[in-house]
Length: 430
Ligand SMILES: Cc1cc2nc3c(=O)[nH]c(=O)nc-3n(C[C@H](O)[C@H](O)[C@H](O)COP(=O)(O)OP(=O)(O)OC[C@H]3O[C@@H](n4cnc5c(N)ncnc54)[C@H](O)[C@@H]3O)c2cc1C
Image 1 (cartoon, rainbow, N blue to C red):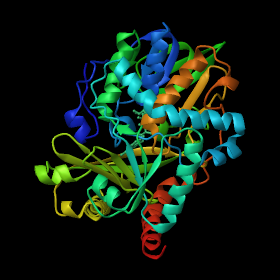
Image 2 (cartoon, rainbow, N blue to C red; image 1 turned 135 degrees about the vertical axis):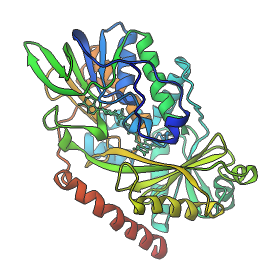
Image 3 (cartoon, helix red, strand yellow; image 1 turned 30 degrees about the vertical axis):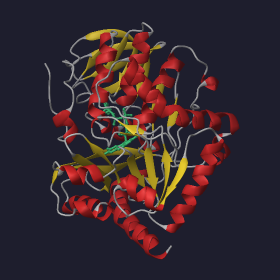
């Protein structure tokens, strides 16, 4: 049965068709069970199926229901910190693995799309990271210098040239990363799903994993209507992580990211905005980010409080942020508004865990999971295919609890308005 119960969004209205899928309603065996059918889980499934492993993917709702089907779809090949800081934190060897993973992540996404002919409006036109205040200009300078040194193609854009590339004078300084780009994210996720199933992966929708139990050297994975006896279980649940794998949920804080799409714009207005098809994201704590898409629309996002984007303050933040960025769009209707959960980690880095033999978990992309979820899926597949944990591009780390986890609902509700005040203060006074 092909359920169609995605969270409403522009992507849900415009994506390629979903593969027909069923619930798991039998007891079966597999080499690998993947929990969660977003970008991370489906990339893992694709790589393993290609190598002939017997793969089962179990998804609570349907592929792309989580962040992967709701994201802004920006493919951004940059971490939140400098390579030096990442290496100081993880050690030189492990740190450089992570840095390389970021540097090559966008190319990896676009090569994968090409290899599997995924129809997802993929464009690699470059990503602008724009400074919202003078303090952020200094931050962009040091990031740009540091990432250039490790081989990332990143340069500086200022003044009139930036105004032309953005189609607005709101920002004065940016870095440009030409390898960045964008996809229609639900189409990308569904494309990964179709490619994995065509290679033999069995993907089940509406099959939430309720428990996993050790059974000799194997694992017994239970859903409401079936079970799988398997050698490996891979958790790819990111911002939607529950308590099935003890301890994992505490390692991340789920934050709400919001998205909106404008009504179709008059051609002259559309042509003026982001005329060379760049995506952009600014340096605010309560980030503004956006891109242009076909049908003459602009997609704009920020952080929020409610994942269904029903709270008036969240809707207001979208309208005001869009108008602040592009004054020519003041008053334009936002035909779609939606939100979802991203996973924030204390060190703002993605994490790969192997808490017990046969269990992997990859999560914590801090808003950069289109590229890094794709990378993480490949790396987890490499581990299962026999690569030693020491040789992986992202190191296997122990759980580290996110300090605000217990208070995350209240913390998120308080953090967004507080950070907005700090952002506005910085913009005015630094
Ligand atoms: C509004 C928004 C905008 C964003 N914009 C960008 C962007 O522009 N660029 C970028 O790089 N990143 C962006 N992100 C982040 C990015 O979308 C995520 O990092 C990425 O999609 C994570 O993919 P994933 O496969 O790991 O997790 P998800 O896509 O969230 O999938 C996890 C899945 O696990 C399932 N699940 C959970 N528990 C269980 C269980 N017990 N049993 C079975 N299934 C389970 C869930 O149903 C869910 O479908 C954005 C996120 C949001 C919400």
